[in-house]
Amino acid sequence: MKTIEEWIHFFSQEVPNEITATRWEHCLRVANIAENLAKINKHEFPRKAYLVGIIHDITKQKKIEFHINLFQQFQFKIPLDLPEEAYHAFSAPMFLRNQYHFDDEEMCLAIQSHTLGHKQMTLLEKILYASDFLGSDFALKQNQKEEWLLKTELNLDYGIYLKSTKTINQLIKKRSKVNQSTIDTYNQIVDLIH
Image (cartoon, rainbow, N blue to C red; front, side):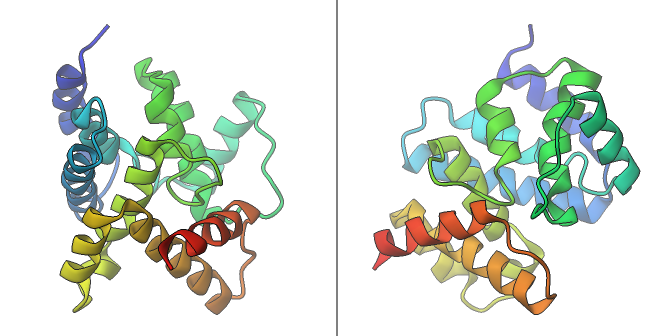
């Protein structure tokens, strides 16, 4: 069984083969932000947050058929309100288990919830969810990026609020369905930050 550091070394070589260079840059930003947030929020293993950051989008750029095949193999029934843009969050843990025998449950759950969120997220899930937004190309281009990062460092729930708000607004703009988990995430968190 590999240590966290061995997995980091391994996936630092492997993930760039599965995604584009710009997606890899996103993963590295997410990993660094996640490790920092893990330290601030006293996660027992901050390097786990780094590792989950580099692997969270390993199936992001795969074709729909790739995801569907994994879902069938794992007998995963696709929820009707699951946007295709979120398929990778569910296929990635399956791919990691199949391809690499990577089965850290805490990290796999964090990957699975990094796009939609849900009501009862663990600390690592919250860290990855917020870091995915803060490390996004969208956030990178915003004048408020440093302010958002600072506010999230002070209160992790603020980063969750930012991402859930952006996700809902983006889906509404595209006239796409909004998954109930994302609505629940927003509804739960909005009360905590006001």
